[in-house]
Image 1 (cartoon, rainbow, N blue to C red):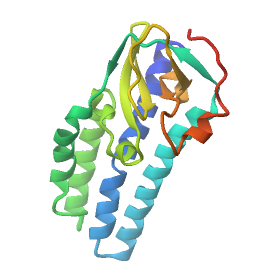
Image 2 (tube, rainbow, N blue to C red; image 1 turned 90 degrees about the vertical axis):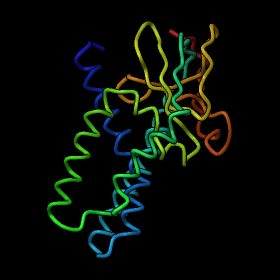
Image 3 (cartoon, rainbow, N blue to C red; image 1 turned 90 degrees about the horizontal axis):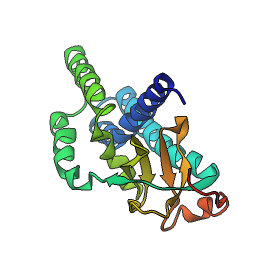
Image 4 (tube, rainbow, N blue to C red; image 1 turned 180 degrees about the vertical axis):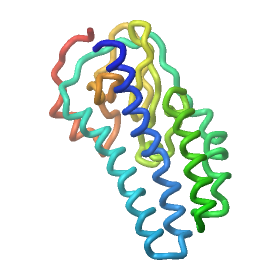
Amino acid sequence: MNRPSRALARRVVGTRLFLVSYAPLWFIFAVRSTNLPGRAVFLLLTAWGLVDAVLLITAGLRRSTRRVVFEEISDKSGEVSGYLATYLLPFIGGPPSDLSSAVAYVAYFTVAWAVFVPSTLCLVNPTFYLLGWRVVEGTRRGQREIIICQDPPPATSSGEPVAQLMGGVGWVRLPTRPPWTWIAGRTTSGQSGA
């Protein structure tokens, strides 16, 4: 994949991860919303985020797998508490209640998206944690690649069984525990890492 299309694919996947990461917040807004249309919108956003998280995992696991060697793995699990503070604190007041607060929220989420997508913030994703998964970053052939996994893969010479993530910018590691193992069981192809 050439450089511009890889960058675009990484931005698309990063945007999906950004939207998925806010599903718990949309649920909080739905609970705290005082009007029915607002509650419905936030419940739809919650459902969308959860469904897209599951789709990212299952779509990758339906592809054929191969063994891939990662030179380095970066796991940001230790930064979850700090991220959650910045993730939740701006929203203590609840969902937007008028036009000016809605504009302020749009400005906040635009800035958050601009910072989230190109940075390593996408590695801290509360929705994936709720589903028993996480996002880590691996280095392969000198390029950073996203890995969605239950447990971070070790950087080993023998490689890890993974399936390619949408756009070829990352991987989904085969499940290491239920309930996802039944999906991965039929996708293993035994190909060697390239």
